[in-house]
Amino acid sequence: MKRRKFINNTAIGATTAAAITACAPQTNNSTTQNGSLPNVRWQMATSWPESLDTIYGGAVTICDRVKAMTGGRFQIEPYAAGEIVPGLEVLDAVQNGTVQCGHTASYYYIGQNPALAFGTSVPFGLTASQHNAWLYQGGGLAAMQKIYSDFNIINFPAGNTATQMGGWFKREVRSLKDLKGLKMRIPGLGGQVMSRLGVNVQVLPGGEVFLALERGAIDAAEWVGPYDDEKLGLNKAAPYYYYPGWWEPGPTLEVQVNKNAWAKLPKEYQEIFKTAAIEANMTMAAKYDVLNKAAFDRLIAQGTQLRAYSRQILETARDTAFALYVENARKDKTFKEVYEQWNKFREQIVRWNKINELSFTNFVTNHTDS
Image (cartoon, rainbow, N blue to C red):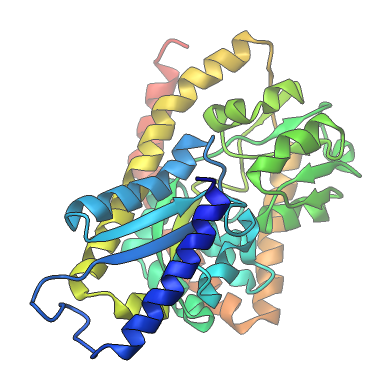
């Protein structure tokens, strides 16, 4: 059966089921009439092609774990970008109830609320472990869920790629002058910073990046890191690979859930769903750390030319980023509220990590054979 036909049939079935439910006696959310937990079927839209198995795998992890922990009573079917809605329209689909949930990145939707950038990552912000600390223990998740409540959505962290690479370029960028007029795929506030440095910014879903770069529609593109970039074939479209990905030092992906659908779940299913999201969040970065080094070595062996951003570019980008945050905070009350709380946390954890992690990392790096 073709996927499109399956989706259409699912939609028809869902409509029929809803009609039957509406005519049936109402029962408590937590149990069916005979006391057992109910059978629930959801759809999950994602922003990723299936070929990117690790990032799409975050969605699969949630679906698989929910099914396993409920004995198959609660099943969620994941769909790749474009199968139900385009990859950059997941939030709208969840908000409108087209699907019950979606796996995506909040910074794709800063046009609807600029503070959503903090849910994923912002330039010169938090590493993966720091971001988890902010979300789970530093008030970050509560701040993001407060924003999402206006969209009729509740969100949970559900993946992290760890610090990303700085993108693929068709020509070298040695100075700020080399960035002027460059057409680059880069989303979020990182894109806004690049725009202020003279870059012509484009926002494209993962499945469109290679063709745009190969055909010259763009001159540069960032995606994730060696493993996923290799899968997309970006090394075949541009020779220069830059680091670090200063705009995404610890980008978190998330699962968004329609609040009406969430409220209908038994409490047991809600807790299971949250636990599955935590597992996806914790395991994705670990997978990338294992996969990226091997992919990186393959890329270099195949002729990829590694380049570091110049100090001039990094320092100007950093100053531009924080000037942008202050500017947005003046214009937007919600952004100001999140930014000030986030920045206070950032300053504190950076001072602490300078003592414990950075000192250790510097020593080990300087005493390890390359």
